[in-house]
Amino acid sequence: MKKALKNIWNWVDDRGGLSELVKPLTTHLVPPESKWNYVWGSATLSCLIIQVVTGIALAFLYQPSADVAYQSLQYIENQAFLGSFIRGLHNWGASGMVLLMGMHMIRVYLFAAYKYPREMSWITGVVLMALTIVMAFTGQLLRWDDNGVWSSVVAAEQMGRIPLIGDSIAHFLMGGENINGETLNRFFSLHVFVIPALLFSFVAYHLFLVFRNGISEPPKVGRYLNPKTYRNWYENMLKEKGVPFFPNAIWRDAVFSALVLIVLVFIAWFVGAPELVGAPDLTNVKVDPKPDWYFTWIFAIFALMPRDIGSYVIMLGPVLTITVLLAVPFLSKGGERSPLKRPWAIGAVAFLIITICGLWYIGDVEPWHPKFDAEPLSEYTTVPEAKPSVQRGINVFNTAGCLYCHKINDQGGIRGPNLTNVQNRLTKEQIIIRIVNGAENMPAYGGSLSKEELEDVVDFLLKDKKGSNPNN
Ligand code: HEC
Image (cartoon, rainbow, N blue to C red; front, side, top):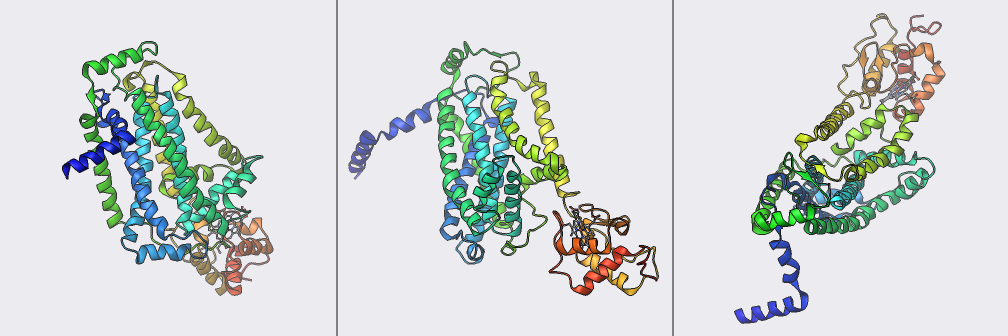
């Protein structure tokens, strides 16, 4: 028996060359000081593997077609064996991957590991970052609820604002002028075929580069990197004190990845995936989609920007970001690698983190986001003896959500214009038209308010206007 197994192995290894493939990977030497700071990349990879496994499981049951997608999600969530858990794991795995990828990039940047001879690792890393973001972005829409769908659509429409090619891109992504069943198909194909294929290829090349150029040694203050002598020096350093990757280095990767997996399983089990809140209404644009957390800060930038500047930022922002990132290894090829001697590098990372957290905060509160906890208007204080329709109008204003976006006196949100004195700006007809038809960032109320409610709320908004004073 033992002999037979050995024979089989010998045959497989002789013809297939497995040990030739694996042995150099496990035995290659790594700098002994590369320790816990070096686990972020492998943990990102572990998340990717979780995503692949859970993603395949979900794809078995998910139906990428507009009329049944939501039912198939309900089936996964409520009936399929472990469905809810796997959905949760896929959801949180995505968050984990984005977060760990960010940590990995920050570590590589702070340690200047992108310098000679590892420029290509950095460049493929930037490509991997972009691909990961596209994965997260296309995955959102597959969730097929209001938030996921409209976040993706808003972003696709933002791309439509890129001059010249924007329309074609948006048209291609959405499979038409607007979101429709075809959009789901497009996003599904991108999410499960196109982007993963690219992602795997680049991951493979990225790993090959790590293997070929070696893991960077932790920087030391005063040790300069000289591209002319570096490879030689690195080689000798490894010969002198390098340790084999297996088992001396890989155990840390394994321990940390296991920890990440445990945390993700825990969250997936106890918190679960986002609740299924109903299939999106494709005919009624949701005004305030809330994208997944890793995108809210980008939305906040768009929301804070005046529309006309916005178009340029949308066009230039990603191009500029990618260009700057790609340029990083070319700006300084050698020299000092220690972050302690590169205070501007620490500054840049701190600035980035503070900016993103700040935008997160803004994205979460105002003015982009309606103020859902606004104190309801109780009564219109300046006209205490207002006629009944005005009083009823106040109620409509509270209950129909106008208050979330509009201020009256000092109460309410600031997403839309302050309506305290709207009667001086607009005529009754204009106000009615606006309420019935909505606007760029205001829902159309034509279908949801009754005729009486509409009259009441308009009466309330006109309150003091000369000639239509409700008291006359
Ligand atoms: C989700 C946020 C939101 C909600 C909810 C909302 N609005 Fe608006 N509203 C806006 C925005 C944004 C504008 C500005 C649109 C523009 O001009 O581009 C606006 C404009 C208006 C205007 C025109 C104001 C002016 O000065 O031009 C009126 C009147 C108005 N809304 C009334 C209402 C009423 C009444 C309700 C409730 C039935 C309501 N809105 C609900 C966001 C909202």
